[in-house]
Length: 398
Image (cartoon, rainbow, N blue to C red; front, top):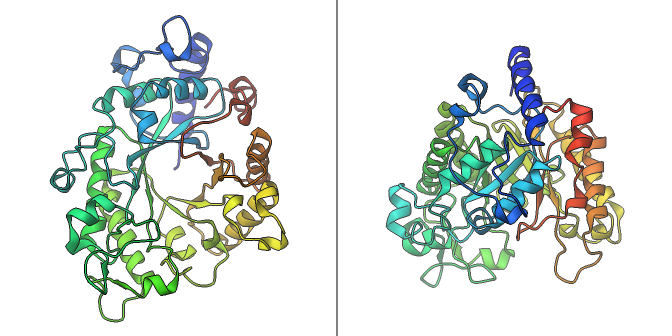
């Protein structure tokens, strides 16, 4: 997103002033004591700084984000994560607005969400004060919305769902029902949730599971997609769906971003899920390939043990992504999801070293924006550069 010199100067001056007063956040909403004592409350920003300083949602520095699940966002753990961001290079949170259970983060006013009970399992009822807290600490808020893996919607709207050839709903290997990605209503529902999230104060929207199930062919042969048009491919179904999302959200003026499989950048087909690199980079503001080393098969990039080679896996994957995007003048920004978790008993354990190696691989290629993924939203401070070190390089414009 383009930032004018005047905006940059105005924004930087404000941040440098307040960083001198309150470490890194605009001000510290923290009582004496530990991070757990932080008070998460609404903030009247007009009483903090002149309103024009925050008249838009533009972020000057590259996004360096943590994934924050709905439970973490709605609990006292948010205070710990805010404190972590205040003291490190982190400047953004990706927050689950609708995760892969189908539940919403807050009691949504979207009619479909209310009708299917997605609001009954909402994780928090004070979303606005919590968002205000992020804004007050200069943390860029990104709303993550899962699209096709929505068992709640599938169960309550069977006409929108993948059906089994023998009757009833089709289910994946862990008995989860999916909605039909050929059905426009599925995508419109996701767009409605995104529009609501933006109105609440999220500055960017990120869509995940924008695809068909990644199940074996024999399992997919049992699936019926009733909304599929004659001759329509999975790729065409995904193309139509992401077009709906982009067109619905474009008038709101916020970045529209998509999580996609890391292998999409090297695949010649659609990976059997409908995802093709060019289909995303030509319409999105940002694409987020999930280049988790633990998810690559033995032999990938000539490596016998990809999970033990985080630097080489991420570097190779992102080099492919850069090359794939090079022919397109206005290609989307590449912002990889990096692994900040240990997968089961697979070794090595992902310590700060393995995480920093992935970040190093990205940044050596000129990719300075990334998101760390840990499903439990647990992050090791030593994985991140201290804020003072970052500020000395950037002049405090974080």
